[in-house]
Length: 269
Ligand SMILES: NC(=O)c1ccc[n+]([C@@H]2O[C@H](COP(=O)([O-])OP(=O)(O)OC[C@H]3O[C@@H](n4cnc5c(N)ncnc54)[C@H](OP(=O)(O)O)[C@@H]3O)[C@@H](O)[C@H]2O)c1
Image (cartoon, rainbow, N blue to C red; front, side, top):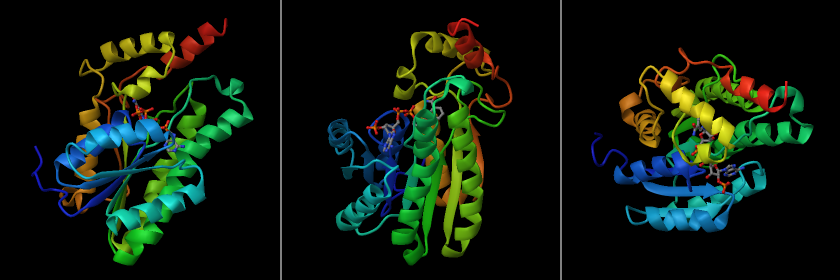
């Protein structure tokens, strides 16, 4: 659907690019002419993913935990020595676990905030300072979640994602002077490897989500990848600081209490 050379001469970093949505974004951008760099924590599956992606185009990789600022610095050095530039950053890495708010431990809370909020900031700050600011152009797309009406059963992730959506606005304003655009995408429920990590009862709730959706389907990885390509390309040149809902209207029409009710039931309430 996009012009084949849309990302010709562009270097793209996709965090969490070894699986699911991140892999799909990397694949789509490679098909549109970009050179890719992917990172995530586990080296072995990351290398395997990079090898698969290399069938389409150039794809380098390095293991990096986005919560560790020093590892993020090393990642930027690796990108500089591999490609000598970075044009687009997709902050996709993240994760969470379902829990009632009162049952989230301090460690559990900190882990999710670190991953989904702090990690996004560390990577954005590093790549902006090392690449985007000196070269006077750059593009950041943050992947968040459907948190507009809260996210009962995922208080930690909802707070972190809302933080990222606000960070998106602030960074967009502060960094406009460097010709850096910053936007976010809030996916609805996307049929991807991320959903495999949830226990069977939650997967049953997801079937209900599909039925309830006004388009009668879950989102696909391609739905998100296509939106990322739009926000990363000159097609959206006058758009910065927004969060684009890519969710088949889930933010307008969905039972936000379904997960929460299930967690209460499982807890014997
Ligand atoms: N699927 C959905 O319905 C949905 C909806 C809304 C939002 N999202 C969000 O969209 C993003 C992608 O989701 P997905 O469904 O594709 O899930 P996924 O397959 O679990 O992808 C998450 C990726 O992030 C990496 N990652 C996690 N923590 C990291 C860290 N600290 N440092 C570096 N890499 C890290 C993981 O690799 P390692 O484990 O090897 O680090 C993995 O490659 C996530 O942020 C997710 O929360 C998903």
